Amino acid sequence: MEGQAAFTYAVNDDTICALATPAGTAAIALIRLSGKDTFSIVDRFFHPAKKIKSVSEVETHRLLFGTIRDEKEGLLDEVLVSVFKNPHSYTGEDAVEISCHGSVFIQQQLLELLMNNGARLAEPGEFTMRAFSNGKFDLAQAEAVADLISSHSKTSHDIAMNQMRGGYSSKMKELREQLLNFASLIELELDFSEEDVEFANREELDKLLKKIKEEITSLIQSFSVGNVLKKGIPVTIVGEPNVGKSTLLNALLNEEKAIVSEIPGTTRDVVEDSISIEGVTFRFIDTAGLRESSDKVESIGIERTYEQIRQARIVLYVFDIKNTGCEEIQEKLKKFKEVIEDPNKKFILVANKTDQLSETPHAFQKMVELDCVFISAKRKENLKLVSDHLLKAVDTGSIKDETIVSNARHYHELQKALEAINSVGEAFEQGIPSDLIAIDIRTALHHLGEITGEITTDEILGNIFGKFCIGK
Image (tube, rainbow, N blue to C red):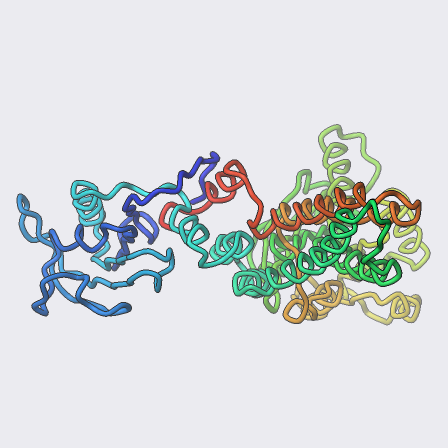
């Protein structure tokens, strides 16, 4: 469960503990402990089956079987203790993970034992915060840990895993190094400003500047894909009343999510649910039928439909193949595009109710040319074609090979860095002095550094790690 408030984390050597598995009764539970007094605290109540004087005697990454005994209460549980010695642990400190039975009583008693013997309860994300502070990974990788935990599809998992393993950080490091080389030459010129010496070849610097600008621009543009893949791609199902929108939604979800009725105007509000198609999460939104209506409630639903079309990345336009002509379809698409004004929005035409056809419709060839999908939502026929068109509308092929930005904080920092880079380019063209150019370069370096945590503030750290689970 995510925390709602931002926390201020002080770098200290307290020994912290927390439940790392979900709260509640389960087969097993895992409690984490990290800090300089970890081993001495555990030694006070853990009795290993193998006779050793202290947990600290064991080599790192070893498992110990034994019992937890409280002086007052006696035997509490039989447990497995995993030993991690610094710096070879998640946090970079001495750490222990205790696997006990999943009784809520045992969990509470064990945490009380740890706190009564010198540990304190960890803040949300404090284990990961310590890993960051101890150089186990940078801030971008730390944020990827939270993304990995919350990933619900293969694509969001792949993006988070790539970022956590340093793929994204490597790109940031490369950009900063290029800018630092750029800045060093400009700064060197400032030291010899009275002698009017140019150490930096302006043509070479201009090429470097353009290269950096292209790479940052590419990362910024990738956010439009990365963000929706991380959260799920919004797909709005629209069309006239009674064309089978709700039936299609139910068929895709394989459950009776939306009310299906022959009465026009049944769907008056937005109905939403998500499914994963070949590792990509799609958030389907069924909407009110588009028509002129004097019903006040239905009219509100229709207005919400247009709002959902504006917010969607993909629009499934469903029509009844028996009584819809190509001219009507093209006119409706034209109207949508005029209202929406978004060239990147994908429209998929879905010709429904093929089960009611007794002969091939006259406009069939034109519908094929419009790349329509022919289905029977009622009989669940050709739904695979809808899935194929949805996947085709989303470019996921480059996720593993390219750096994808999915974090809003990183996106905004990259935008600020690009603004500074653009200012440097304009300054070169206008012949502005090197000292002013150097200021813009430092600004770009600052914003790139905030992504990886090379430059950061306690407020930013508190906001990021405060959203983590307690045991992470």
